[in-house]
Length: 415
Ligand code: NAD
Image 1 (cartoon, rainbow, N blue to C red):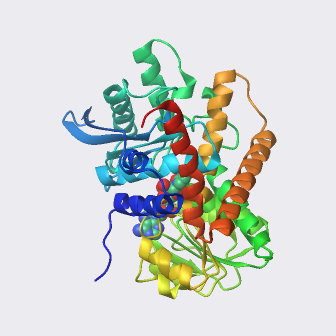
Image 2: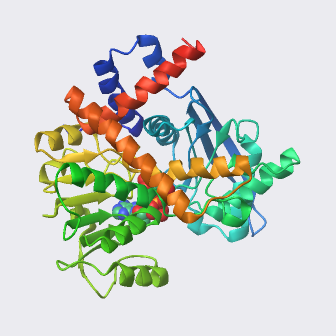
């Protein structure tokens, strides 16, 4: 029978694998298996037609053992409590792998933002902050953009929070516009960090990026940046899919031309420089590298046996099920785990928060250099842990993170 685990069950199974290896105390494991705090809110919004609609909102704070909760806010009709909890869980371990002074948080609103006017979207974003103002703050829980949210949503949230507290607290959200305390390099940070991770892995495998073939699912914020950087480095991106379907060009897709196309028509479908292909085949193509950069739970026991790539670079959160992990490990596929590969975004969010606290701002080169260094150091730590313990890279990443978090939990006397 096909495995049908929820994102939270997947996250818990990943943690248990690392906990077993580390002989983690039961009390620490108990603390980490579920979020520390979950808040569910109802957000009434006055719609343009005079009616009032009520939306479900969530915020999950998985752990604050190492510092304030940190994590994105997602607007999507499929948002639910289980998913938000799992995403906050992954944030804890992501911050732990990178050694950032944060715990994990995540939020979401069940909404299709494409169906709202700009005014309705603003009232919804402000309503979310009003409902959760008590648990948010630069030293409590710091949201950031995620699927379908952006720096405009962060600006409204910053303003609402500042109105409530009668002072501007720039560090209460990250992913802000530069003018409102945002960091240079933040928009590209997740894609850039993922590419650094991939380059480190290629170096270990004695492979060059030039001419490597790549297939990508997702051409949004992170997928498009990663594609662009890889294209500039000489990789050949032969296939890309998004919600509209897939496109393929065996000689490599011209990413700059595709970016121009999506700036006009939003989706990859209809791009003149490639042929159409079914989007769900993107992971099964004979390429060197596949990159899930859209959704969770997309590499499963069904398609994992068909993965021909040598490397899976996880940019989406939670794209691989535990069964798929097992299958790909057996087949010698190196999976670069989400909690390491996509941590560039939260790392530059951390830099943004540091700059807000200092009131002093860095150049883009400085941000990118610091990001590259942090990703390289974290990759090396995880790689060494993998070699020393003969585990897969995901378990190694969790082991690095769990060691740090459990030490903080014990030092604070929580258990
Ligand atoms: P986005 O909304 O900008 O882009 C999402 C992309 O996925 C779009 O191209 C969309 O068409 C595609 N997509 C949606 N449904 C699909 C489907 N059924 N099949 C194929 N493609 C589909 O979001 P994003 O910010 O690029 O985030 C993508 C993933 O990366 C998410 O899992 C997110 O949690 C993760 N992530 C994002 C960041 C960040 O900084 N934005 C950081 C870490 C992780």
